[in-house]
Amino acid sequence: KATLTYPGGEYEMGISKATEGNDGIELGKLLATTGYTTLDGGFVNTASTKSAITYIDGDAGILRYRGYPIDQLAKESSFIEVSYLLIYGELPTSDQLEDFTDRIRRHTLLHEDLKRFFDGFPRNAHPMPVLSSAVNALSAYYQDSLDPFDPEQVELSTIRLLAKLPTIAAYAYKKSVGQPFLYPDNSKGYVENFLRMTFGLPAEPYEADPEVINALDMLLILHADHEQNCSTSTVRLVGSSDANLFTSISGGINALWGPLHGGANQAVLEMLDRIKDEGGDSADFLRRVKNKEDGVKLMGFGHRVYKNYDPRAAIVRETAHTILQKLGSNDELLEIALKLEEAALADDYFVERKLYPNVDFYTGLIYRAMGFPTRMFTVLFALGRLPGWIAHWQEMHQDPAGKIGRPRQIYTGYTEREYKGV
Ligand code: MLT
Image 1 (tube, rainbow, N blue to C red):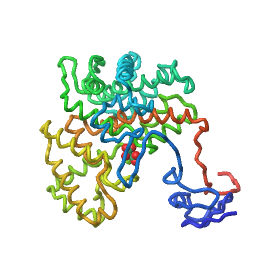
Image 2: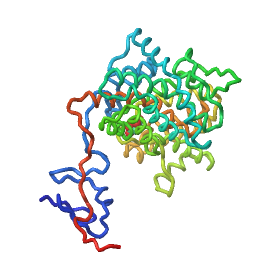
Image 3: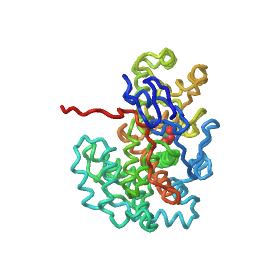
Image 4: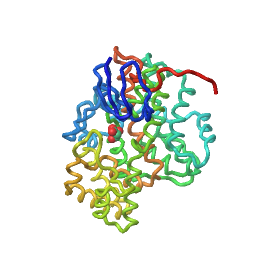
């Protein structure tokens, strides 16, 4: 039998010894290969997967969807085109795009009963659990599109999700601010309709600024896929049990909600606000980061995959300039962000650790300038990530070797205990 030594004691494959201090957590932190199996708590590094959707080279800072560079797609395509590309593997022809857009447009309404579902939540409900619950509830309302092995049903649930998520997201927001819901206006584009349902009021006509529409469309493209991270592998794992698409996507939304995943841009804004409140001295803040002062952390820098500049961050930085200027929003925070970035990139401490700004560094500033409260930031991320999740769920089902997901477990508890009653 292979024996593995770890901080909590010794472990033999197949027979575990419960030693003092070993509650599984110590061992869980350790990555070790015994020759039989590899211990990697929570698929941190070793679980290998394959996919033909998104290519990332973290060292070179490259990100491509289906082979096309992200910066080109962000500048020249629309979010709907990119959604088509991710899901079907090719950029649409103009006829295909028209047909796809038209099919989405026909499904934007929510069933009137589903609208009442929102009434069951408290007024101060965070929009994320409302979003994931309503998406899961689609499985109850659309029972004619739940079969993962019927291509027509998969297509219908795909279109329904793309069409209804902006409506659900806007209603989750309206619910949280106590305003009435607006029906979708299908004469408007995808993003424009979402902005109108979010910020419009029944008595006041709402016209979204075309630059804001374009910027949000582009941000959705940048967030549309990022290979098999926490939320995407959740969607695949839930789907691997042959659960329907709606419920699998709902699982992904929940995974995204965590501050280590979708909630990171909120943490950046809080950090920038704090630097501003403390006098705006970014150099002093970096000094405190390097001294590892309690509670002083550089948020929005570094990425598990990118050991170089996150290609999305460069695009977002440019957009932050344009949108904040256009909307006359709090430039002071942008100034602090730029200074912080400049100082960090000129400092060996951060350069040696390969800490470069990531996509979360500037997005919060833009969203806030557009009028979104921080509680909506992860909702916007979910809107963007939806086509990526759908593409992964479909890809997984198309793999003939596909099996239900089941991580290999190394048991670290007691082997046998004598039960003596309470
Ligand atoms: C993302 O875009 O999903 C985030 O960067 C998280 C990640 O993939 O590591």
